[in-house]
Structure formats: C-alpha cells, structure tokens
Length: 312
Image (tube, rainbow, N blue to C red; front, side, top):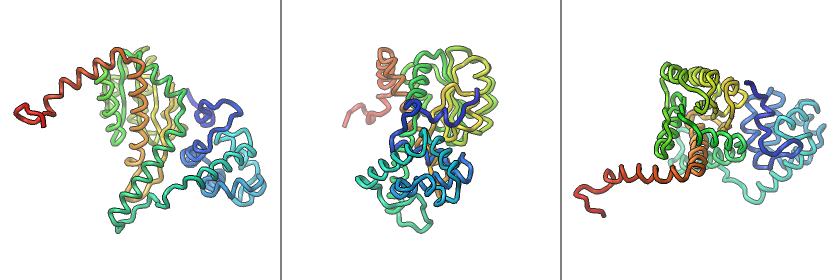
C-alpha cells in the first residue's frame, strides 16, 4: 500500500493543527531531499533563517528564493501547515526558541586536520541534533501501533543490511531478552525464505536509511503479501519500502560529510527508534517481560564476575 508524503508526516497533530516549531526544523531537514529543487530553496531558506523568513510575506519569500508564491504555499503544506500564515507563526516560534537556547556554533563537517577536541565537539553536536530531529518527527501514533503489534506477535523478523543490519541485531537481542521470538536477517536469501513462512500475528520490520534497499524491501514485500504486520524504519518515508509497510517510523536524515557517511549518522536515529520500540513492548508485556529480563541477566551474571568468584 502506497503512502503520500504529506499523509505520513501529518502525524498526530490532526488536520489544521500545525506541528510544533521543533518538529518544523526536523521536517525541513528530513523532507528536503525528496522535494523539488524550487521547494528545496524555500525549505533551506526557512531552516537557515527562521526569524528573517517569519518577517516576509508569501511574495517576499518567493522573491527571496527565486520561486513562486504557489511553490511557497506547496512547501508549507508539505511541511504540515494549512497555509503560509501558519508556517510564518511556526518560524517565529522557532526563532524565539533559538534565541533562548542557541545550539553550539559548530558544524558536522569534519576536516582531515581537525584537532581531536573539535572532532568530539562536532560529533557530539551532530548526534544530539540527529536524536532531537528524530524525536520531534517521530509519529507516536504509528509507533504505538507498531508496539502493539510487536507485543502480540507470535514471531518477529527484522531485516537490515550493512549498518542497518547491526541495528536489526540490536533490536532482536533486546526482544529475545524479554521473551519474544525474534530473528535478524542480513542475508537476503534467508530473509525471503523466512518471510514466506510469516502469517497474521507475525511482524516483519525493515530497517533501511535510504528506503530503497532492494535486499530489505523484497522480504518485507513477501511478509506483507503473506499477511504479516509490516513496519519500516527509514529516513525516506516516500521511498519504495513504504509501499509494503503498515507502519512507517521516520528517522532523521543527517547531513553527510566525507569522513562521516550516512551509515554513521543514520544509525544513531535508528537506534533511538529501536529503543522506543523495545521499551514500549516491555511496558505492554511487563508481567512476562520483567521475569524474562531478570532470568537472562542472572544467566549471564557469572560471566561478569571476577575469576575466583569474589566480587570487588
């Protein structure tokens, strides 16, 4: 089933209710890559100078960005606002937030000759921004539905390749420790042959930053066609993976650099979503999850004690 980008990002705010200023910043960063070039210019302008753009009329912003009034209005609507007036109000709110607590003036661009202290500062700032953007843009209605499906699942299959495969393994080991039957698949052939066995009450989760990784989309499609509940964790909610997802959980799309490719920044936001899923399931299944977690901890406790059995 296909989804319109606007529908995916409508979130829990409802029709006619604009998202919060923090969510606006996250949506601009996340949606910009899927916009037309003219809409990107509008999005980049409002993200780069919210205070300045808040003072402009729709005509003024169109002139500033070299676009048309219609493009400005379309961009506002894509970002979740009924019209340009609502976008201006959000921009003013975002500008006020930035003035009261401005982020450190560092960039995620890491140069080859940067001192290690600068590297630490830049990476820390970028990680914080990625997590904040993901939290602001995460649709809690979709998240709650995915949690409910996982809590009632007979079996959970998670698909991921490369860095996303590491995130898939992280989710599976968490679910196993609270008593769920879960499997992580990074081999596309095994993923598909396992997906064929899924049925209703099973859950399949695809983790793909690009939203277009064929080796992840194929098993999700098979699981979808066999009646399993399907979830996509992706930075591109308008990508092909969403066609086969009952629930889409959007991660932040952080800016890449030569020394920090998307695989690194995307994993940060994916791990946040994975933790949200796990904690949500643990809450819903607490009566069984708590004893299972305690049992798994006890089973491994001896491996963490000093040799000789003496605690220090």
